[in-house]
Structure formats: C-alpha cells, structure tokens
Image (cartoon, rainbow, N blue to C red):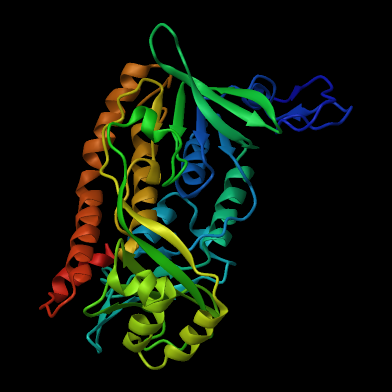
Length: 415
C-alpha cells in the first residue's frame, strides 16, 4: 500500500524532507514512523548491536526506528576483531556482505608469543576440515556498512538525534519511548519496546540496571603502518612479565597494536615517562624484531588513544517496555575480541524469541518480559564461555611471571 503524506515544509527533525511535494510512503507503518514517530521498536544506538537488531526485526516485518547521535563514520580502537563465531552469526543474520569492500583482513588463528617464544594456535576447523575464519577491519568502515544495510531495509527508519531520556507511564512505570534533542529541539519517539544499545558509556544504564561497569585497566592503541607480522593472517598476543599486548592487521597497510596498562602501573608512572615511557621502555623491547620499526615510527608520531577495559555482568531485563543490548548490557575484557561475537549471537537469539510467531504483539509486555527472561538464560550457553574465558585469561596474563599455559585453554578463544 502506498500512502501519500501532506506537504511538510519544515526540515531538520530527521523526518521532514523540506520539500513542497508530498512524500509517498511505502505503507502505513512508514507513514507512522515519519509523521507520528511511532514504531513497533525504538532502538537507541546505530552501532554493532543496534544496526543488526534493526535489520533482523525489520526483516520480520516489524516497524523500527533507529536513533543515532551522529551518523558520521566512528573512529575507535576496539571493535575491530571479529571471531569466527561472530562471522557465523553475521551470516545467519544475512549481513555477511558487510564484511566485504572494507579492506577487511582474514584471520585464521593466533600467534601467542610467550617470553619470546611463539606458539601458533589455529582456529577450529569445520566439518570439512577447513579452518574457520575471523575478520579484522577498521571499526568505522564496518559500522557504516551495517548502517547502510539498516537504511536499505524498508521497515527501518534511521534518525540522527540525541536520546536524552526514556518516556515512562506515570501509572505503570512502563517505558513508552524516548525523548530526544534534534537540532536543539525537543523530540519524541514511541514504541511498545525500546532497546538501549548505546554502548559501553551508556547514559541509560545507571537509571535502570542495578550494577555498573568495573574497569581496572585501559587499552592504549596505536596504528602501525606496513608492519611485518611474524605470522600474517593471525592475531598476535605478546605475553611476559608485563600486561598483555594484542596485535592484529586491520587493513592492507594498517595494523592495530593494543597495549594493556592497568591502573597505577609503576612502569607507566609520571616518574618513568608515563604511558609513552612504558611503551618505549617495556613494550618496544618485548616485541618481535620485525614489528619494532613500525612501532617506533608510530611511537614518534604520537596520537595515543585509549579505551577502558570494562567488565559488566549481564542482568535480566525486568522493566516493562525496555531492554538493554550489547555493551550497555554486558562487557568483558577485550583481550580475546569477543564483544562483537556476543552482540551478533544475542541478536540471532532475540530474532527468534521476539519473532511475530513467538510474540504477535510487542505491546504484550508480560509476554515480552517472559521472552527476555528466556533470552537471559539461553544466551548463557555461549556468552558465559566468552565472558569467563576473557576475564580468566586476562587475570592470568596480566599477573606476569612464568606460567604453563594449556593449548586447549587458548584454543577456546576461537569460539
């Protein structure tokens, strides 16, 4: 059904087209998204989790409004390494094409360099004895592909706006939608289900969740140009009597190095030259010789960037009309690169639990909460493994000292 809207002269709220010509809508649901800011689902955050959930629900015929503060290409130093389990989930969601055309690098396992000795650990093989593949890429390029996929879905409307607060029923406490600021003006978006997927620094978490993230270290990142890796096509973990170092190629010429620096690390103290002093005095001598020239060049160039390494255990979504997803719900140390794999597998599970067959009407909050309780418990079979492995490995590796490491344990990082 094609619905014709009246002229809408004003622009700037993400919906109006600023044209005197009537806008022709594909159907009534699109008209309601544009004119009344109403949908079946309102998602806060067009990142890894938000975009994929929007596409998954849109493919089922749900009407979705996807809110994002800035639609410019993001520039981050994490969210660049996707494990084989994440690639598989992305394929299940019909979004594997988003890995193409972004200069992504195929990865086949890890090279664990332990006190100078390297051990090659391939990812597991499939039923045909073919090694499963991961991908490494520039985070922003991948996000833009996911946003393009969401924008191309006829049941999804993306709006560039800042989500400020939730809208709640004064009688029941049920969340009814989101209050936003669009071009400095107040705006509102409504739906029976609001999904908070605004990332590790969520502005909504503190109001609704009983626990908050704990961060005891940061990853400091540099981009190496034309680095020579000991084993191309592999992530590299450098271990010793210092916090772990992670290295992986994200493009034809670019390689990411992430250096873990715990709070109050003596070698990164002001007296020892701070973060740069730790990199020069501890990290540089510990790297394989083939990587040192590109690392020295990046060190001289500067531009160090950091991200907190946070842990946040997941809790059951219990608020009627609201759910959390992605890093706003659950985080683990990024040493094993499990964050995106968790998000994509969560979306696969939610797609089935919230399908029109399972939940015909998302305004049935009791049924939705029942399904979200199932989501909390069903995700544990995979997610708990990733969470525990990430925290356990980091605890071991960050402690330093000589250890006997199990190859079987390290293989688990292939998910």
